[in-house]
Image (cartoon, rainbow, N blue to C red; front, side):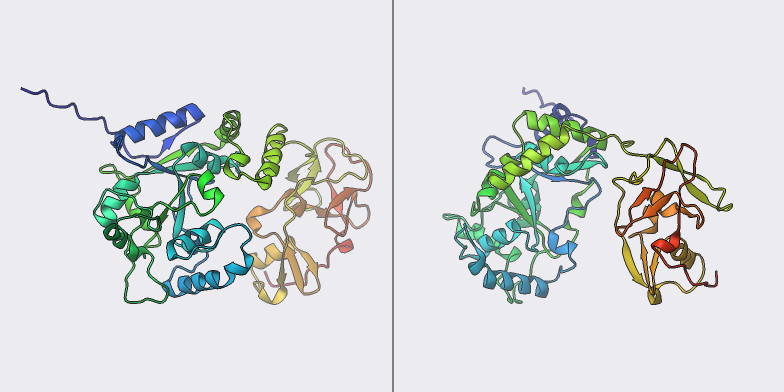
Length: 410
């Protein structure tokens, strides 16, 4: 009599959180064991790092609004036509799959989504450009499980490699039909495929791809599944991101690992020395907002410490200004008042923040025509005209850099 096997513990398919490299690798190991990979499998789980946890698993052709077959055929045709004169290093492919992989490699719009066989590389992409301002995420995918659903076989192919069984090749051909061939219908959901290593970075990044079908949000079907899960998400909290980046660097993972060229070396040096000199949020901060005595109904900008003469008051401020023609503004009401109160006015042009939700203290400066204590230069930077003491409200003469708004009906 045989003893029945003890069922494996199934974890709920909720987003998981890793605050350290050890925690992250532990979660990767647990999920891999849960997915029942075997020693015969040529692929392990695949990984994709994303800078923000809420970003969807969608290809770049969707992000630019061209997710239709006609647009894609135009893009593929344009790339194939112009690439030969611009290629410096690679020998251009002669088959459609390799050309498609090359398009993705150089940032052209495709239905491909980048993955990697390395959890460390995916984690690096998740945290490399995040200074800890938001949560990042690493997705894990069971490519065998995906293809079992897509083509009925627990198999992952390299469709452009030599020696692939022709019958297997025909299974994946519908995901990349010939340009302008409308007789072949593209399937609805994604498929996992291996690329041939036509470029050095594809090899160094251990790249693999999923190719979307006609459904733009094809992976949404598989997110959050608790039974037969093929997709998992590991969240990296923003406060843990700098530590993750340091840990990866200590284990030899930096820009030269991902981009093995001189450009990668230059970026690696920038990243290393930038991370060694973190800034404090209060560096060069001189002011805060308080109720104003000049504007009885509003607020003003007040010094919280002594500001020496000729000091740039708002260092590191977001200086983006959007210029709007007055004809495009609301004619009246509270929205028009926003433009009148918080804009630099030059005749019929209004310079305002790219979003009024991003107003910084500089936009709240009140006016003093007789004795302003700051000036505005041609770059719209404010400098003190004299020493400003703690508790003083900062003021400027608006007419030195802006017209006054014309009266509008509120």
